[in-house]
Amino acid sequence: MQTEDRPIGEVQQMFRPNRNNQMAGYIIVSFLLVGGCCLLFMCAFKLSRAKQMPLFVEKGESLFSLSIGCVLGAGMIIASIFLFHWLRSIASLRVFLGDEGFCVIRDQRVEVFTWDQIVLAEETALYERPRVPVNLLDGEIPKIRSRSFCIVREDGYNFIFDANHLQNHDRFAALVKWQMRIREIPWLIEEEYS
Image (cartoon, rainbow, N blue to C red; front, side, top):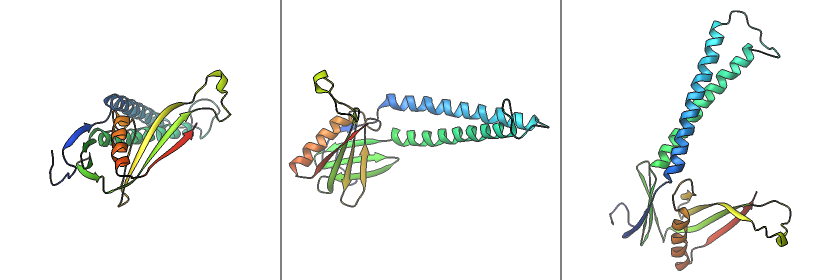
């Protein structure tokens, strides 16, 4: 597959988002939306029915607590809308790896990264390890919790991905790293500990 829009040579592999993470995200969106609507309407209904209600009380309902409930409900609804929009953009993500580079398709936008255009790649490895020195006699070895990658094109545009964005992201990163090593393009590794 080689077109004028995607000058990456013959496509070797295609990478897509992880469907399990997307389904979990849609479940969270559903809970946020339903919970936010229930909280907002319940608090708004009680506020509309209240004739005489104190502004503040130590226990029970007050104008302040019901107003906070309305704000939290609206915030949950807005958060669910933003999360839904982000999940839709992730769902449309496709990465095609070819002989001459790779192509990122997201939200009907095509971004081409040819090997000649890439100037740098950064790998961030986040380790799960205490900040105190590890006793190696106990056999405790730090384990990688997650790895994320950022590939930078010469015009400053970058493609950031991790396990939440691409299924088999480590495999894609290894293939890109191999191509970059052949062309002597820098690959920086940064380690972060938590």
